[in-house]
Amino acid sequence: MSLLYLMRAWADQVGRKIFVATVDHGLRPESSDEAQMVSERCAKLGVPCEILKWRGWDRRGNTQDEAREARARLIGEWAGRIGVCAVATGHTAEDQAETFLMRLARGSGVDGLSGMASMRTKGNTVWFRPMLSLRRDDLRQYLKTKRVKWIDDPSNEDLRFDRIKMRKAQKALDGLGLTVDRLVETATRMSTARRGLERLTKFHAAGVAKPSALGSVYLDLQAFGALPLELRYRLFAHCLMWVSGAPYRPRFDALLESAAKLSQGQDHTLLGCHILTDGTTAEVCREVSAVNAFKGGDVFDGRWKVIGPAGADIRPLGPEGLPKCPEWRALGASRLSLMSCPSVWHSDELIAAPLAGIQGEWRFELRRSVHEFFTLIVMH
Image 1 (tube, rainbow, N blue to C red):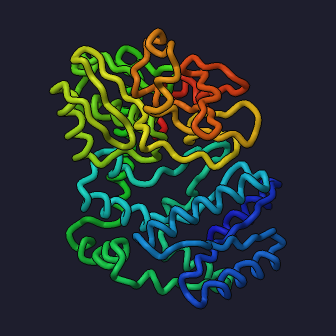
Image 2: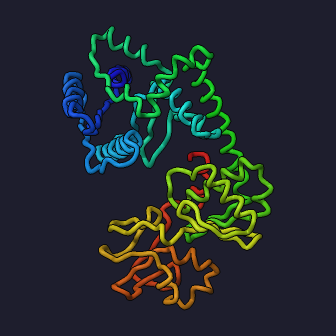
Image 3: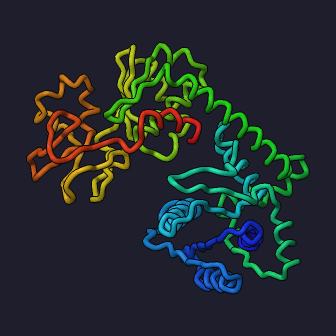
């Protein structure tokens, strides 16, 4: 509610228009009425508002994590549909401090302890948190002075959730000097360190990593081994995310184990990727069994742009398709990287596999360029 009034005041001052989305998660009986209250308040302010309903959840997994992911997806889709270029969310300084403590408890490194970014870009939309330096009590006082009512979510008192445990622990931490302001200050310093490490990683990446037209990445192991450990782990995690399309890096202990296997010359898998090595060069390529099933449209496995007639049966080339491509060895690519590439089938007949030498009416192009492989190092 504070975000609504502050953003409306900003919009009036600069002559801009704002739109509101509020998510009805459907987790409590009152949620529908609460979303309607927001809509009615927006109507009085002359601000367009849309209620987005979360449907189809099987109620498995971590409730807060699932709700957060659904909220981001619904709002992102809404922003794209109505042509909004930027989305503001209402996170506060307390949210930042709680995030820092939760990640500290999980043993996070520099990236995790840098907290929530004040701004990030996802697709064509900028997401920003204009209230990240403001305290909840100050926002409540702001609403009181404007005689604006708000609703407190009862789940904010539910000690089943880690975030609420951290919130309740804050009073005890204040007495030890670990105040919200001090935690936010530390997260800010960690964010500065993270940006510096990302830029160093990007600077060194060109001499170590080489992305390929098949979506895999080759590593010069001698140059890779000469990097400081922190940069080595960052670059390796980036390669895995680039090839798999995963939004998050693997857990650090899994990354450490994988890097150790790589240094010992062992082929293995992680995060939906094969990591192959001959002791001099390593290749990170897509794991065939991890490729997402094609459900139509113009994107395959989240990475490939499909160009050709609609309605095709598109699958990974796989072990059954590779022998049908007699010239594949001349391409100089590993068999595993080729097997994960998209191909077109009719029943058991291979129609086209342009990346493996079988041409047809279809083409497949990586959605991200080689240039983006390097620029995105400072954005993960």
